[in-house]
Image (cartoon, rainbow, N blue to C red; front, side):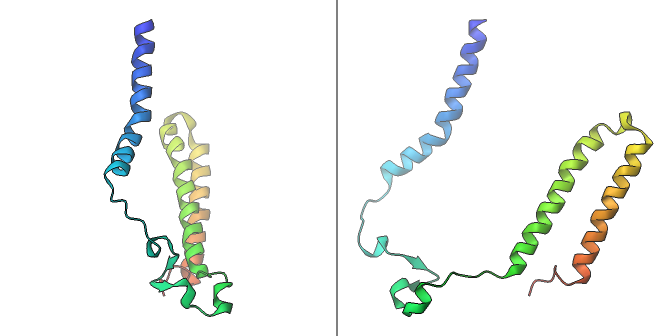
Length: 124
């Protein structure tokens, strides 16, 4: 029985060491030449000091469309999470579960059609 735990411990050690070994090797062989220009803030190809004073204090605003894409992705990603267990247990669930899933998918298709009709899926 102790041999089984030893094998599990070996796998756990390897699982912990596997990501850290390449990181450690990269840290050891990287060029180490720090200077002032490498430590300054760099954004969009412009030096931060080049912006006027009022522009340095403003939050960067993203287009709302990016958030819409993310929300639509999350909705359909959650749909897939609900579909997998349903598909696995389909034979045991019966007709009632089939009707429920058709209703669920119908609601999601209507939401997709609404988003499509409103033009939220257009990349402008």
